[in-house]
Image (cartoon, rainbow, N blue to C red; front, side, top):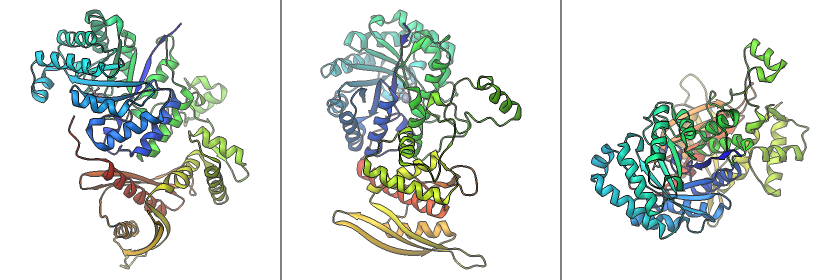
Length: 516
Ligand code: KIV
Ligand code: ZN
């Protein structure tokens, strides 16, 4: 029987730490459910001691997730560990993940501790965590730049204290694949009690080696891989789980291991995350990028038509892509639309389905072809954004040449504790988008800085929907919003309003956060 590799997903913790990937509680819970459907073994839900918002999010995820383990990250300090436990204790399978740096540079400059003190702290932290649960993971932060002998000592102490998983992170994306394999083999030989624990690897992608390093470590004996969906994370990101999993899946001759990942859930999970954080999947992204299964050159197309295996090493269906992008037309029935929505990873109740069904039909009347992206945009617009505080109702924009200033008039709905209030506003601007943003900003009483404004066509063709992504910042808080419409000015207004809603939620949830 193939050996089992455990998949530890940290999209909601390490991933969420990346710029522009902040998620609110509701979004985190929905992503956690998606990760469970994907089949990850452990969901790292956050860093509960970092802020009240993180704590609440981890607690909500712990309550929502049933089959996967839920981990909370804690520094190697009793107060952090207790706070972490409070947040995860209601999970069906809680895990405390405590970490402590072991490299000379981190111990000296960041922790200001001697190696002896670090050994004591590791021992005390794991023992403290064991008072709450026997499912304890210990991470030696910056392990890849640590002295190997000292690292083996710290790991031995952690095992003796009760840790059941030892994580050996390449925190700064520095190690090379052959070195990482040697390090894992060294630790398997030199850590006392190594045979009783699972060795885990956690790779950052600063040199673009995260996948290669993770796979090298697995071949050397690591049995847990840590990563994120789409590889989001600090700096250049974490290893992309979908890439590691599909490498193992496609080359069982090299990697005779199995995971619990339902590979056909990979695409829905990546799409969901991309929608939540408002960042499109890059065209050349392995496995899930829009071009990953596109064949443009004549020779390739000819080959694929004769036999797909000439230029495809895996099928689009195996990662949950339909293979045919155009799916819904004006004659599609509610069953086809329902199936498409489920394929995209959403589960809606009958009432929500009816609303989306109506919107899809309306779009299909205007547009010849309705693509996956269109359907998904409507689900988000019609179902998920309904709970937002600010909503766009109507708008008109005037734009001309010859020095006539562009002007926007906007009607918005404000959801208040007493019901829904309709308000109207208008403003001039430097351009039509500026006029819209000024008008909306004034109406909600916020004037954030616009850090990014990006327009993409959702699909091809002049009737394609425009997807607008904006990133705004206010008082150190940042938020991303995405809007989709056949009219890019409407999409711009929606994106801005979504970002404002998220900014407000983030402000409510986040309090002062200690640095890692
Ligand atoms: O990169 C890292 O070292 C981490 C640890 C906290 C596990 O994220
Ligand atoms: Zn990390």
